[in-house]
Image (cartoon, rainbow over all chains, first blue to last red):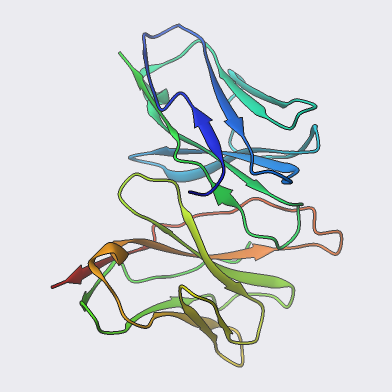
Length: 113
Length: 114
C-alpha cells in the first residue's frame, strides 16, 4: 500500500461526458502528479501541483484540467470525453519537488463507450 | 531529460539474481537514475534511485558505472512476484529541485520462471 488513494477505481461513461477523478496523497506529501497510461502511449506525465499551485505541465489536453485543494487532495477533470481518453489514470505524490521518490496510487480505469 | 535504453524483455529463474541493465549515455551531472516497476496494471512502484554511488535497499541494489552512462538494477533473489515491467528513468533536478515529472520509456518486461 503506497498510501496514495484514488477514487473511483473504475469509471465507465459515454463520449461527450465529463468525469472527475480524485486523489488523496500520502500524509505529509505536498506534491501531486497525474499520469495517463494508454495502450499505445505508455505512461505519460500530465500535470503536477505543489502545495496548491500548478508546478509543471506535460501533455495534458485542453479538455483536461486539474486542481489541488487546501487539504492537498487533487482532482483531475476530464471533459468532452472521446474514445481515445480510455486509459488508466494514475496519481502520485511526493514530499516535495526534488529528488524524493514519487509514490503512485492504484489508478482509475476510465472506459469510454 | 536523458533518454534511457533498456532491453524489451528478460527471463530469470526463481531464486536467482535478476540483473536489469539500462543505458543512459547522455546523462548529465545533475541527473539521477530512478527505477520503478509496474506489476500488471497496478500503479508503478518505486524501487530505488541514485546519482553516482551504488545504492542498496530492502528491495534491490543499484550499480551505476563510474562514467554514469549505464546502470544495473539487481534483484538478489527473484521471486514469481517480481514479474513486472521495470522502468529505468533519468530525472533532471534543477538547483531548486522543482522539476518533478517522470518520463517513462517502454521498460523491460521481466519474467521470473519457476
